Amino acid sequence: MDTVDTDVLVVGAGPAGLTAAALLAREGVDALTVTKYPGTAHSPRAHITNQRTMEVFRDLGMEEAVRAVATPNELMGANVWATSFAAPELARLATWGTAQERLSDYAAASPSEMCNIPQHVLEPVILDRALELGADIRFSSELVAISQDAERVEAVIRHRDTGEETRVRARYAIGADGGRSTVAEQLGFVFDGESGLGAAANVWLEADLTAYTAHRPVTLYWMCRPGNDYWVGSGTWICVKPWTEWVLLFMYDPAEEPDLSEDAVRERARVTIGDDAVDIRIKAVSTWQINHVVAREYRRGRAFLAGDAAHRHPPANGLGTNTSIQDSYNLCWKLAAVLRGEAGEALLDSYDAERQPVGRQVVDRAMQSVRDMAPLSAAFGFRPDQTAEEGWAALEELSGPTEAGRRRRAELASAVELQNYQFNAHGVELGQHYASGAVLDDGSARPVPDRDPELFHRPTTHPGATVPHARLQTGTRALSTLDLCGGGRFTVLTGIGGEAWCTAAEEVGAELGLRVESAVIGAGRTYLDVYGDWAHRREVDEDGCVLVRPDGHVAWRSPAATDDPVASLRHALTHTLARAGRPVPVGG
Image (cartoon, rainbow, N blue to C red; front, side):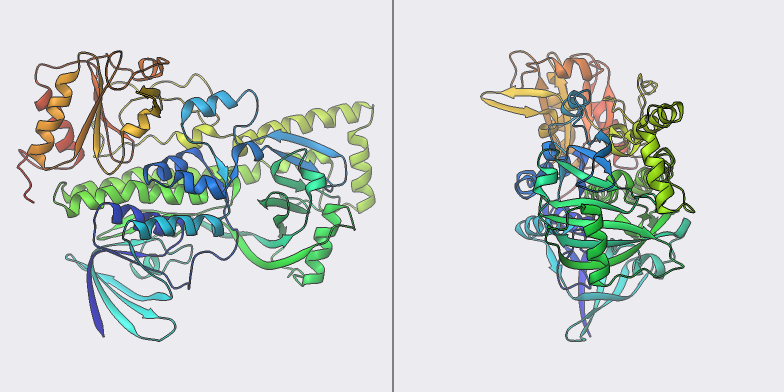
């Protein structure tokens, strides 16, 4: 058996694993990524890509490549509820930041727009970027055994075509191998929650529905018909390619096996379209289950979990792939820093401290969003034991000029409004605020939200938050404060009178063997705060500074200039990087 030595073994090449491969390759880390599958995803699966994930892609230099093959935000539109595409609408909700009253919130929060990109389209883009950066990714290579001791992780990888086995010895391992994670199982990770809470089927199909959709561009069309009380109704149509390719998702009772024959699923599609003239071509049918599970800890020894290996939940809120990619973004800069000798081993503990609470929040939010669908069925007048005739009569009453009709319409309006917590939860998508050893708190209180923190993002430079987006100008180029950060390096942002922070960044960076960039923002400087965005959002004086980690989160800030900026910045960096004692230069 051949033996391969590497610094990091990444198991799994889905969104989390491929992102990890790309990030580690960019940092020059010797890493090996393996997956049992012969290639990237072969079906749509996840599709909503939020602003924070697009910011990760922006940092990786692939945002435009993603946008080129995605459905843009303006075509994500709304959610429509109806009994069929051809029938009158029952309700509509503007979603994913496209409502007139929300457009400015999303634009002000990030330079990157949400988009709709199915997983089988997204994964090849991430793969291409990872390979461009020099990643070593091996398909049809299945993890069959993994163990660890205090010094290393040891794994056995079997090539699924040849049966040949390879022993891999790594300093660390990332389990990004999905909901049935071999890494999690064999290394003893413990999970909280429940599995098998519901059963669902995905029908991937082609059907030209342009006549019913082009005038109301939407990502999700919810077809709710009498006799069906499941939370997604008779079938949810998910746009894969406007307006000809779709996934039809429906729930079923796991105690009663559904008819998933091509004729049966085509008939379900035909009924929910409501137009027998539309040609339907079935591409694939698959089943899955609803889980509400999160790992109790994301780190055990030298192994880490990321993506679905760590958190498993319903697709509500579209947070699955986004959270998975952001897991890797948090972890990989830390691994690189430790492997280069720039940080202490304790830095890696912050991955669990920061991402596990996010995973739990996401799992809980998604499950609550599932429960929040129930008032829609009630407002439509549907219940499990009713006949089709009773259901249609209930719908007829919904539009009637009666007291019962008025009451039901008010109930429906409230039920639709509640769906904002699933489809416009901007604060959930962008509001991760870390508390760990990799953040040096400045003693100030976190800002009190003035609006619902799940629905609205509140930008802040409070340590642990993501650095706020602010529009800047340099020469003829427009850019964001986010463009000054990332790239695997720490960044000091300061303003007029704060130039000493830039000198300190250079000096402390050399002392610690780190890449610490700096930027002065203000009138007459390289980066102009042309709209005053940064002045409104920096929350420190012009001569203060904000220290930003490689993942865009604020590590520390100084409200104003200090007598010894070198000592202040040294303390902040050594704390963040878990550098014990007085810092010493790193060779190489």
